[in-house]
Image (cartoon, rainbow, N blue to C red; front, side):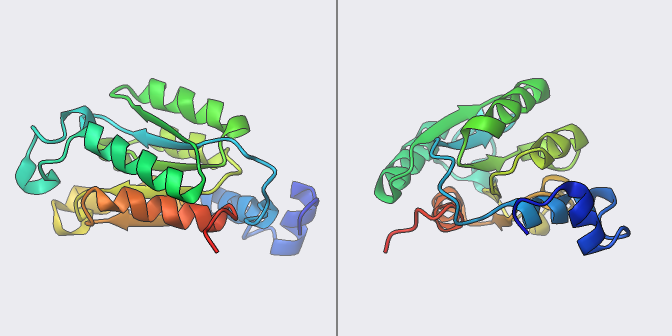
Length: 187
């Protein structure tokens, strides 16, 4: 299906399936060649609000590791996979959206822990939906064992996968999965 226009894909997938959010996701999936190595840029690892307080904020939920520990883990994992890592954290929604927009043309993939924006930000979901690269959503805690408002994530609609409840190891798991999706998995 690669190389087809959106109109041709809508006709192939059926007009009812090509409308709405799920239709946009299907169109993106249909046009994205997961084994393509055309984008050789880094993997963007994005961290949302309050993650700069890891190790200090609610360690009974998020653990004692710091954001610096997460960055070290991501860089070490990326190095082992042959993937460059662009690691960022922001507390402002517009800042995260700006980085996602920049990644559209530069990143091989995105690992995102949207934190509290998971449940509230349609704007971040819409920005991610414009990216052709694969996206993996990560949560340190198991959001499904927490308050009911945390059970829904807008980002999950556009993510190729979701990893939650694995502590900071979830970032390493996300990078390994992303390596497979972008054709950089070790052989």
